Amino acid sequence: MAFLKKKTVDDVIKEQTKELKGTQRQITRDRSALEKQEKQLEMEIKKMARTGNKEACTILAKQLIQLRKQKNRTYAVSSKVTSMSTQTKLMHSQMKMAGAMATTTKTMQAVNKKMDPQKTLQTMQNFQKENMKMEMTEEMMNDTLDDLFDESGDEEESEGIVSQVLDEIGIEISGKMVSAPSASRNLPSASTSKSDGISDEDIERQLKALGVD
Image 1 (cartoon, rainbow, N blue to C red):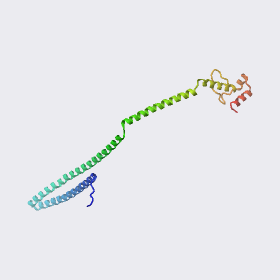
Image 2: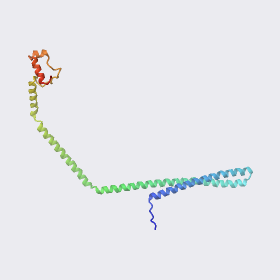
Image 3: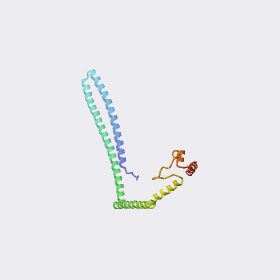
C-alpha cells in the first residue's frame, strides 16, 4: 500500500486557487462563445427580417434573449469566482498570521519559564548596590590622593624656589611674580642698564643663564 502524504493547509489552498483560476478561464471562454453566437443570431434575425419571415424572426429573437441572459450569468459567476479567490487568499494570509502569532507565543512562554522575575530584580538591585560602592570607593581614593599630593605648604615652597631661581639670574620680584621677559621685547635697554648700574657684561651673563645666545 502506497504511503499517502498528508496535505497541509498550504497545499489545500494552492489547489483551491488553481481550480478557481481554471474555472475563471473556462467562464471567459464560454462567454466568448456566447458572444459569437449572439452576433450570428443578430445576423440571422436581420436576414429573416429582410425576407419578411416574421415567424422565424420571433423564434430567433427568443433565442437571442436567452443567450444574452446566459451571457449575463457568466458575468455574475465570474464575479463570484473572483470573490472566492480573494477570500481564499485572505484566509491564507490570516492563517499565516495566526501561525506566526502561535510561534511567537510559544517563544515568549519559553522565555518566561526560563526567566525568574524575582531573580532578575535581585540581580539589578545587586548591580546598583555594587556600582554605588564602587563610586564611593573611587571618590574616597581620589580625596586621599588629593590630600597626599596637594599639601598646603607646596604652593609656598614652589613660590620660594621660583623666587630663588629668578634672583640667581638677576630678575627681581616686587610684590608679585612678573611675567618672564620675552627674548626681544623685555630685554633691558642700554640706558636702563646704565641707570641701574648693570654693565654689558652683566647683561651677557644673564642672557647666557637664560639660555639666550
